[in-house]
Structures are given as C-alpha cells and as structure tokens.
Amino acid sequence: MNQMVWVGIVASLIPLPFLVWLGIYPLLVDRRLRRVGIRVPGLCRGSSVSEGRYSTSFEFADADGYKTIYISPLSAGPFGYAGEEIDIVFDPKNPDRRARSIRELEKRSEAWFSLWWMMGIEMIFLVGTLMIVIAG
Image 1 (cartoon, rainbow, N blue to C red):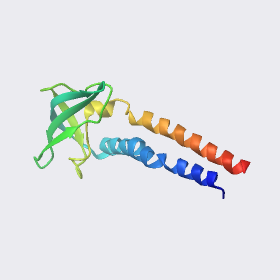
Image 2 (cartoon, helix red, strand yellow):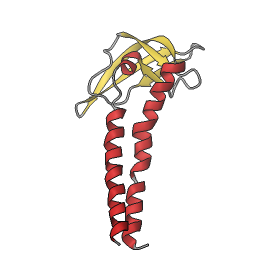
Image 3 (cartoon, rainbow, N blue to C red):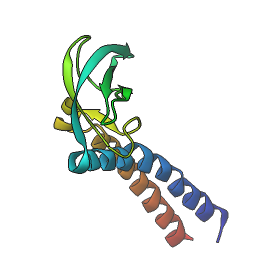
Image 4 (tube, one colour):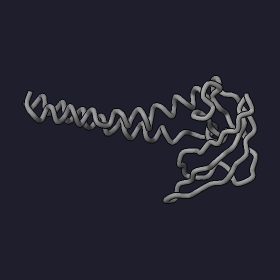
C-alpha cells in the first residue's frame, strides 16, 4: 500500500473515539436512565454560562441518602434556576456519574447533533480513502 492509503486509514480512525465519546456514549446513558433510572427530587444550585452555553448544577440524595452534586453538560439553555426543585433521574449502580435532570431527558439530546455531524465527517474520510485506493 502506498503512503496516501495509510494517511487515509489514519484519518478515518481519528474521529472514531470522538464519535463514541461525544455521540454514542451520552445517548446510551440517556437510554439506560430511561430504563432503570430512579427518579428523586433534586434542588437546582444554579447555572453558569460559558460562551453562550449553559451548565446547570443540581444536588440530590441517592437511595442510600448520600448527597450527590450533578453538573449538566453544556447546553443551549439552563435546565433550572437556583432554588428550583427539579426531579433527577440517576443510575442506581453509579449515581454520581450517571444522572440527568428530567428536563434533560425530556428534550432531544444534543448528542444526536454531534453523532450525525461526526458520522458525516467519518463518511467523507472513508470515501476519500476509497478514492485513493481505487486511483492507485
């Protein structure tokens, strides 16, 4: 194989970890929470803004009474305001890593945008690699 084929193969592999981490993993977490998540009341601690994107902080108690703080990923708008009571859904096996506010679960996940955008880039790289292989 010539060097351009190897460049194409490497270029096709580079986006894969990002596709999994930013696209597939968040969707799988949301799916799991919808299936086995436990819904508890939580308290919004406040929101922060960074470059026009919002991150909201919540506090809730898991099934054992352990207080957990959950910070939402950046989104187009806040999921709550300081002092507001909002239901939180958490994974009983991992409450401090897998939790979402009910508002996050009810709206379409921004991970879908990341997933489709990265899959488009991946397809461009794969088609480019295929063209290199065919041409030479």
